[in-house]
Length: 391
Image (tube, rainbow, N blue to C red; front, side, top):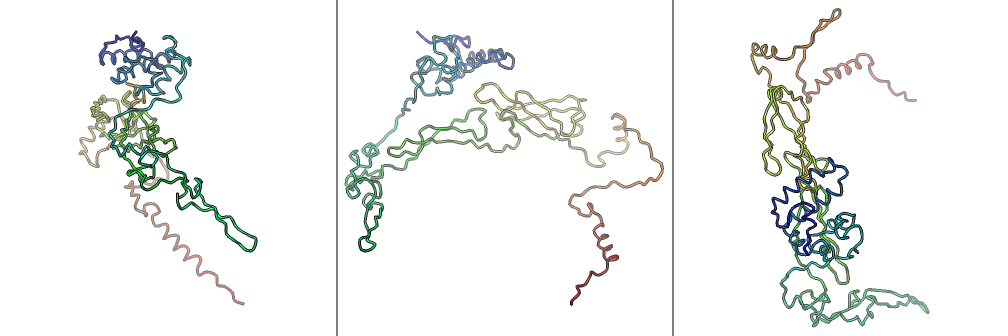
């Protein structure tokens, strides 16, 4: 009997198209999302897992062929432990035929990955022993297989010193292969250099420094379990966007004073090459450094299809140059802007000063001539310093 559990979760039939599955997932994801329905966390995980399997043609084909139970017992490629743990380890799908919550014994080791690889007769003659006939190497007779030679050195009458040294015949390996029996590929060393290309699939929403691990793909040695190949993602700086909080994007955009006061429209080229058209109405003033948000246009959330963070835009206002308009037009502009605050001239000791441009590179603008004044003051009032008195 065919296993239709994942189809039943999404509410589609077994022959549903990719678009039908996607449309139904979006509908259910909105209905059972934990933000809107806090009590539906497990249901949302079931929906997300069902969609992850059925939206992938390879995974869907395997599921149609072996079902949920076969996925767990067979260890088919494409179904990682992290996915099956949702299915069997945490109580999800507990009502479907008794496959929930720890009732099944987990495999300690997955099945070997099988793929075609063309090899020559010379390649298959060594089998990692170092000899061309595939037989184990012989124990070194000089050191009896221990890799060391023990010699005694006389220190005088009735005194000797025991000295251990590396066996020169086997070079410390404890075993030797006759030259005529050595594998022509590895020259009796049991290992040889080989270049292997690993295809790294970067999923949407992966973060900086996230690791992608290829189990057992490290360097191989006889009688040693191979290590892993670990790919560490290094995120490059972007010319427009800056990522923060894993799923949010930030950008800075310059607008003119006219746009800040009278509204604007701008086009933002997103990471997926879409053009986002953002319109801000007239009358809603944008202040320097103000931040606006575009919801749902940030980075995708890792392993959560169709969920995204937000896009935050910090606005920088570009003011016009000096004397950009004649005085009559400035008066017209002033007439439509909010009025200036009132000004009352103070009485008493009043001095008018001039406001000038500030140049951070001009040191005199910081201290004026005060340094010279202090120096001349010291010369006038202190005179020559005290002289040392010699006795």
